[in-house]
Length: 86
Image 1 (tube, rainbow, N blue to C red):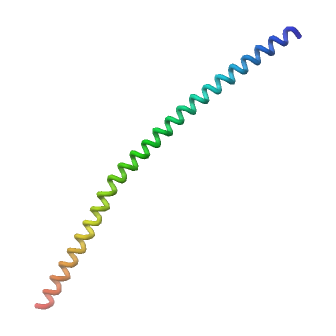
Image 2: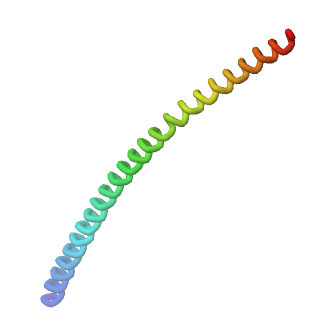
Image 3: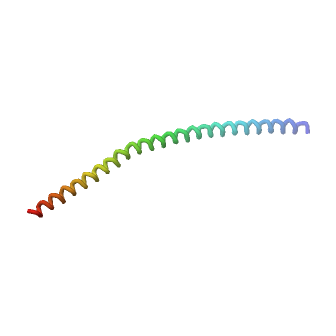
């Protein structure tokens, strides 16, 4: 029994040390994952800003083109009416 007890204590200490190392390693990995998630969130926000800054002028351009189209139709209808009167 004298030889078994120190061996059990040594193995218990090694297991506790191994468990501590694993816990520290997992905490470091989780910290990196948290930083990566934060960077990904910032990237998504930047993409959202760029997309909205591109879409806003394009939607305005669409409104302008629709207005030009209506104006051309109005001019055609007026010119068609003048030709019918002649």
